[in-house]
Structure formats: C-alpha cells, structure tokens
Length: 212
Image: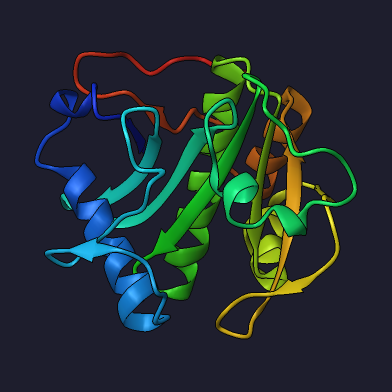
C-alpha cells in the first residue's frame, strides 16, 4: 500500500509519468463521466490550480493510475476563494500557510467496490500523513454531501461545515467543509481502515517518512 506524493519538482523520482496519467484519470472521471465544463488538452483535465505549488497524491496498480487527489496552499489564489466564495459563510475564507485546499478526488470507475473503498482510505490517510509532516493543521474544500460522508466522515475524519448547501452548475448539491488535522484523526482513519503502516511515498530517492 503506497500513495505516491508527487510535485512538478519531484516527478523525476517516480517511474513512468504518473503526473500525466492522473490528468488523464481526471479527464475520464470529470469530463467523460460527469460532463464538467473544465479545460482539457489531449484527454487530460487541468485547471489553474495545477502548477508547481500543487501536491498530487497518486494510487497506482501495475503502473496504472487508479486514484488521485491533490492539495493546494490557501496562501495562493485557490478554488474555494476564487470560484465558490459564496459557499463559505460561517467563518472567513482562509489564507494561511497551515491551511490547504483539497480537491480533484477521483477514482477509476472500474475499481471493484472493496478495492474502491481501500483506495479512498489510503488517499485520505496520505492526506493526513502529508499534513502532519508539513505543519498543515486543516484542509478545506467542497464536495457533494454524499462524498463528504463516504470519503471522510465514514473513514474516521469528522468534518465541520463552512456554510450552507448550494447547487452546482450540474444541479448537484455541494457544501464546503473543513477537516482538522491531528494525530488523533490520523489514528482514527488508520483504525477504520485497518492500516497501521505509513502509506506515503516521496519516490525512489526518498525513504518512507514516519508520521505516528
């Protein structure tokens, strides 16, 4: 069980091109399946928050990307602040080095249900491990309520809401939320998943870092 933590500057530490493949997975998930109106090129989905500041979390099986998520600092212009500020009404929009935005949580549609759940759990744990290693105390973002529940809440990560429900352009309900990061939440997520080793990998030139 390994989640590859990739940035533009560390891509050389990984075999193949998982960065390009995660853009391709996002294209299949968001544009082909969900008909999102977002930019793409050569069957790769991207937006303005894909740049050298972005941190990607990639789950691969036999070299093929099957799951992805990303983090982005709120000290730069970010999605929730620029595109969906109306979703945040309970507290000010953050712009702090210890608060990052999570987004683009996508999975391959052909994953079996048991494996799908496992990939979700490992990606969530990778988020938590990375944040604890880098002094990040919370993640903000927006999701369909059912996804908040299946991805985070059901996996030991309580969410506090940042505002009321709204409706996206595709007619689905969405809501902004915040996940507080600490060792207790990481332990809760690992206990739920039955995972007790670290999942995060920074590539061939790095060793697995300890977070517990």
